[in-house]
Structures are given as C-alpha cells and as structure tokens.
Image (cartoon, rainbow, N blue to C red; front, side):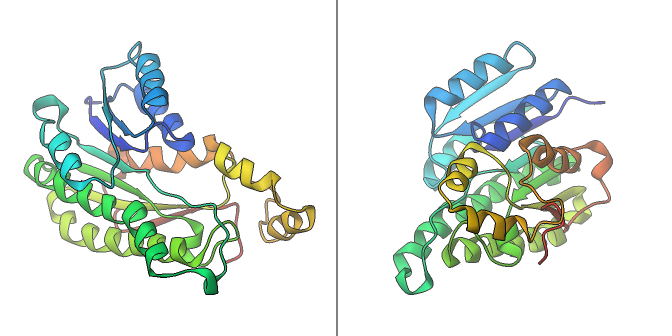
Length: 248
C-alpha cells in the first residue's frame, strides 16, 4: 500500500489524536495541526518514532495563516488525506439566550475551517487523481443535541451541506469526500460535561441510545479510518452515523 500524507486538524484532540496514532501505525505520513502547542508537541514526539510527522501550531479560524501553512506543504508533504476534526461546543444554551454573535462564533469554528482546508487541498488531490476527505459533523448536525445548543447544531448541519457539494464536484477526479456524525463519544470533554449532568438527565440520554452507553474513542476512530483507506474509493457523499443506534 502506498504511503499517503494525511493532514489532520484538531490533531491533539481525543478522537483525532487516536486517529493520528492509527494512521501512523499503518505507515501514513502525518501533518498535525492544532492550537494546543504542548499537546501537539507531545503527540508529534510520540508519533515521530513510528512515521514522518510535521506539527503545525495555529488556530484554524485564522484563514490567512492556514493558507500560508498549507501552501508550504509541497512534494511528498502535499496532503492526500484530509481530516477536519476541529469543532465542538458543550455549552447547553437555550434558544432564547442565543444571539447572532453566538452563531457567528460557532460557524467560525465548525464550518469555515472545513471550507478553507478543502479549498486549499482539493486542487492537488484533483491533479493527482486521488484524495480522501473526512469532515466531522455530529449527531446534533443530523437532528438536535443533548449536549450543546442550536448554533452548534446549525453549524454541524452546514458541514453536511459542504460535504455533499464537495463530494459531487470532486468525485470525477478520484477524490472522495465524506462526513462522520459522531453521537455521544466519551472523549475527555464529553466525559466532563457528562459527569456534571444530573443522574436523571443522564438516564434520559441513555434511554435514547439502543446500546445503552456512550461510545468509546476507539469506536469513533474506526469509521474515520475506514473512510481514509484505499478501499473507500467508491464511497463518497455519505454521512456515517456513529451513535450506537441513537433514535433520530
């Protein structure tokens, strides 16, 4: 299997750090982007023992900087795999307490970086006739969220629209674009928010998940890893639900 270069945004996060380890284990070259300098350096040091790794420290909301950083990825470092893993919001805010600024913030974090990275990576993928793009939406983007708010749900719904249109445009060039809609996965962030919930609320959430529990990080990684594979060449424009059978 050829060595591919994978760009992962939000690489130091719970799901994406585990994904980075899995991609390194199969031999891919990694470009890891995150704003958490300490965590990113630790992950880079760890994975450098397995594969070639570049660390890019920055905020994906800074489009001009992102364009400079990605523009410098040439030759063997040109991404053939892109995973947009940045995003999230665990603030439960009623609709009447949201305003336009709140929505703008959510779009800036959850949607605009997806557009920017796809825009920057797609031309080289088209020229090479190969590409795998996986965007993180959420179960909330498919329906509603127990853990967040309407602005977040709107943003993650927009990610699905971007994914569908990009898949349609890029499919003739061998570039597959898909989204993963994770349900409640027990990352550290979700686990912290979960423990703050009253027991009655926790049981109400679990009652809507047929498997009766939160998902694990390893379970979240599995579907993303598959969509990044060579074998996923006939899978594009899809949304993979990873939610334990969540009733939606």
